[in-house]
Image 1 (cartoon, one colour):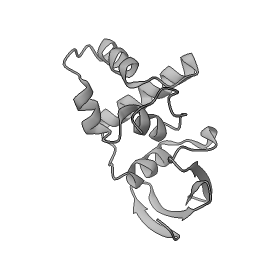
Image 2 (tube, helix red, strand yellow):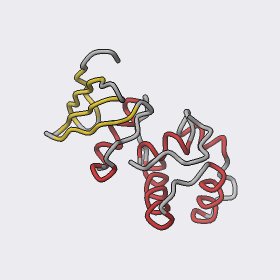
Image 3 (cartoon, rainbow, N blue to C red):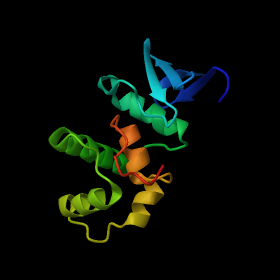
Length: 134
């Protein structure tokens, strides 16, 4: 996206403008800046609406399952002050959900560019240190 665009998203009309470091997203009178990977520069601006816009920009409509994972990621970060990599994410989700059938492939179906990369981005968190997804 090389020019300013107005998009209709699940959160309403959103204006997206490229910047030298990433994008500037304006909605409901608030402007959120991202880096070149799409991660928010000011994590305290995160809202569920911003998550939906970030997902929309990546071609994803968030489902209840996405939201459960985003909620988990935000709780994990609040407790450990670090974003989990895919291995840790999968282990913790299996334990929390009691679903041993939950696997890496399913997480990649939900987050095609990588559950750690896209999940943390949509959750308004920093990219995991050892993230190989993105």
